[in-house]
Image (tube, rainbow, N blue to C red; front, side, top):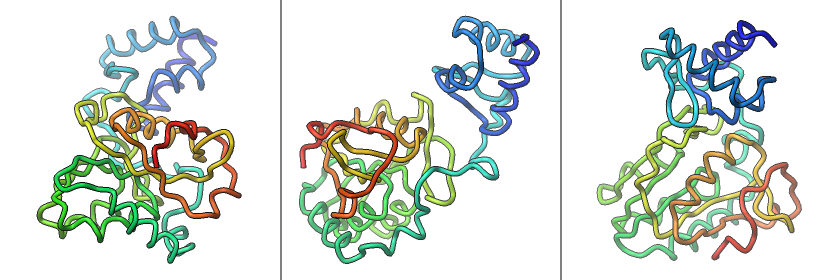
Length: 236
């Protein structure tokens, strides 16, 4: 593939997404990593892109706040999932909230089950990092709950903020516990349906001392393509 073709592909991906990680470029474009780095350096030298840690973004800071039209995460949209197995999810959320200690820093991953924790957190004065705007909305009426969100792209169907980059604002956050859901759970581990979701969630996993999995019984008969973490990594 000629350099001009590679540059066109790189710019097209950046126009669609605003920013992209080097590993994703390496998967999508037929060229060696060294060649791709030279392409990125050349485009940056021309002022057409900006190099960032782990990838590149469009020049001038014009990064998309939302996913491009037609871009969707694999899996069930949030509005469809929220009503499924609602009594079980409410019970799980109540039990999970009972594991939180007053004043703790926690991470609450986006999901219809983790959302059910929120109504039980008001009196705990927690510091919460979450990638879910649904969870942000549920916590906003709680004046003693401090809320942080990572940087990234908003996927509207799930109302979740995800980034494929290391520098998403979470690197200096440390939590005692992370509460997460899953698309499926099986002998291979905790599973999710989408690669971008896996990339973003793995960075969050590394920011917490203890992982707490919130799933109802249907997730043990479900299937998903990508392993988020091994079962032995889960504490509760």
